[in-house]
Length: 284
Image 1 (cartoon, rainbow, N blue to C red):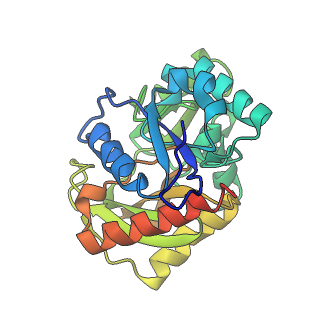
Image 2: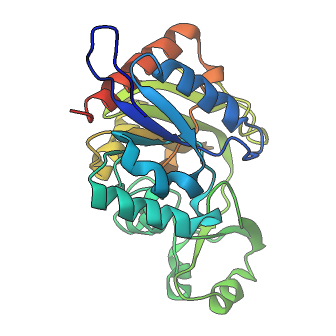
C-alpha cells in the first residue's frame, strides 16, 4: 500500500478510518474527510476505510487516523477489534487510544463534576440527585451515547424514576440550564488552533469564528491538560451561562468534527500544517 517518492525514500502509509455515508445533523462529515484525505496525501500514502473494515486492514499501514466515523455505539464490536488489533500490531493510532474524555464514554463528566471542575453538574446515581441544582427540567442521556443519541429532556418530578428504571450507572443526569451560546476550542496536541461558536443556541452547528480570550483558553487548556494525551486532535465544547461563566459540555477526544468549512483559509492552512506535522511525528 506504500509507494516510493521520486527520491527513493519510502512515504509513510496512513489508514483514514471514516464513514463517508454517515448522516449527521447539520454537518457533512464526508466533505471534511475527503478534504483531509486530499491534503494528507501530500505527506502520506492514504487509503480510506469504514470502521468495520479497519481491524482487517490495519497491518498494511504505518498509522491509522480515526476521523468522522460516527458514534462508536453503532459498531462497538468492530471498534473493540480495531483497538485490540492496533495494540497487538503496535500500529500508532491518532488519536492515541488512552483518551480519558469521550473516547472512554461520558463517565468523565461525573468525575470532573465531583472534583469541582467547571462542568455542567452531572450525576449517574439516584442517590446523588440532591447534589444537582433544582430545575424544572433535566437532561438525561446514556453514558455511552454520542451525537445526541438517546438524549431526552425529563421533567424534574420524573427524573428519579428514569434513573431507578435504568441499569445502574448507565445514564447521566444534568440540569437543563439556560445559556447564552455554545463555543468550541480546537487543539492539535496541546496547541490551540481556533475557536468557533454558535450565536443562536437553537442552531448548534451554525458556527462562526470566535475570538478566544486568555481566560477562555485557560479554561479550555485545563481540560486538555487533564486528559494527558501527548498527541491528537481534541475539541473542548463549552457553554456560556447567563452569568457569563464557561462550563464544559463535552471533551471530544476520539473523532471530533472540525468544522473546517467555518474557518478562514489561513486558519485552515495552519491547522493542516500542524496536523500533518503531528501525525508524521508518530511514524518514526
